[in-house]
Length: 202
Image 1: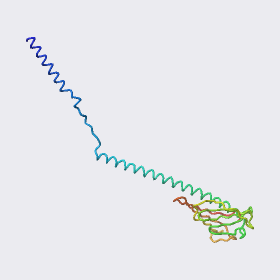
Image 2: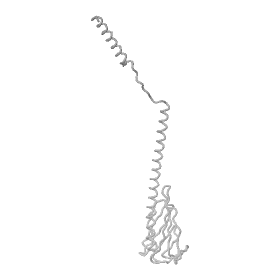
Image 3: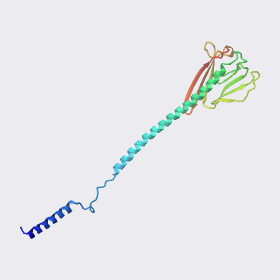
Image 4: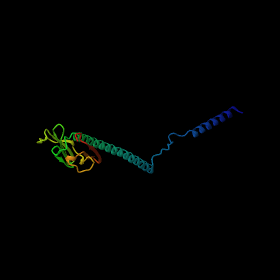
């Protein structure tokens, strides 16, 4: 083999290598990446799913708020009714005697009596407010101003007067028990409470 022929062949091989390399390496200036976006259907589906999740979350929060409001109203109603009931029961136990003069008023929503200390006490429902007042003397009465045991929400309030056998319609002379029945309403919640009181001096 001639040296000149060898040189020509090597040049051809070099050109072939360069051509192969150029064809195997992509031209970066002409390459376009395959970019994808959201289709309209995908966007609509996403909006619908987010809307459903938001609606469920709103319902859960609303139910929690309703439960909290209900619990607060019931708690307030229970507190007001219990305090008013305990106050009336405590004082009715101190009625002085079974004479008409010591219990001059025995109505369904109004009770006046004289207690063992010689003062007069009156409980009365006015609208939805349960009020109390007292007089320093029983005869004659010298009434002071009204004080609210419960500012609002009491309706109804009923005093029931019973004899020793538990029969209703008792008079002062045979009074043995006083039933107190009241309902306290706060917001949309109502709570009924009832107690029976026996005066200690009877």
